[in-house]
Image (cartoon, rainbow, N blue to C red):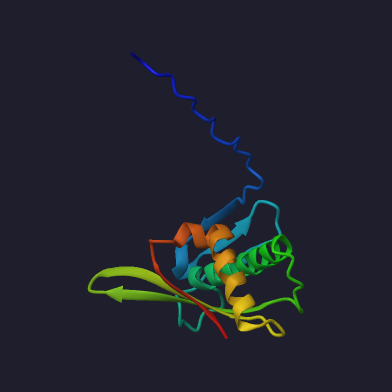
Length: 147
């Protein structure tokens, strides 16, 4: 006897936005430019005296901005009145272990005016919501700190 099981269809996927960049030269002497012209940066090796940024700085800026937005989304969902915009200090380490490079990251988040309990609940929910947090989960060492 065979019993038919109802299989739920996966939710429809909708691409909300696609970022497009063109990079030449890499981190030593390169440039990156977005297809819409809003971003154009010179690239430099971390710690160099050359004018330019590096991928770790770009990642820190992108993740902290996304995480701040995720905090706002979950605050609205949880019906928590946010004080001013959250402040996030992001650090992304480029780590050399033996001959292999990895990265690790810290987000230090300040949510003035909220109780520690409420702020921690927001950070936990934001970490589950933020696409950058989802992408890094289990892949790199991450610390998200309420400061």
